[in-house]
Length: 198
Image (cartoon, rainbow, N blue to C red; front, side, top):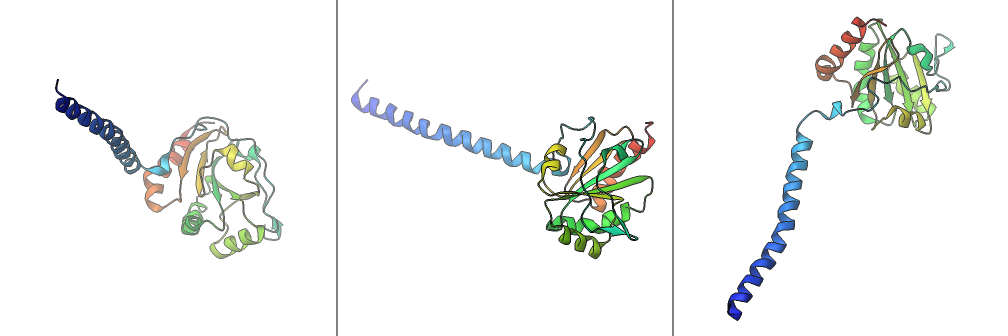
């Protein structure tokens, strides 16, 4: 091979060496974007589905009362024998404000208990939030340091867990409950939990 031919081969090899990592990066970027755009992020898998709800007792939100009595905190013993929705929320959470009217509608269905976990929030702000939108919760525990959210496997607020009569987590919805995802995702799961024997 001549010197010119050797130089030409070296130039091609350098180009290929530069293009291969770029091509790999672009392929990974395309796969990442496809993954982001396919599927519903509200149905991310949870390792807790089918397992017992965490045995996490939470104190009540300070000063939150109904008819002159303190609204109770979270007690996992209350899950047994009842279909329960556990909603993780905070007053500082913008989607929680959007979700609040839907929670008030869900609270009308007396077949399902609606329980709240107030995540890393100030009690005064939580009370004002519930005063503004209404308090849909039969019980509302406060998770000041976020430890309970870790035990529940919370990605962020709002999130809602469906607990069956057997006190096991049957379903998890990430993000605010909307009329669309309620009808398409959550309601069928609630109906299934209500139909199941304990």
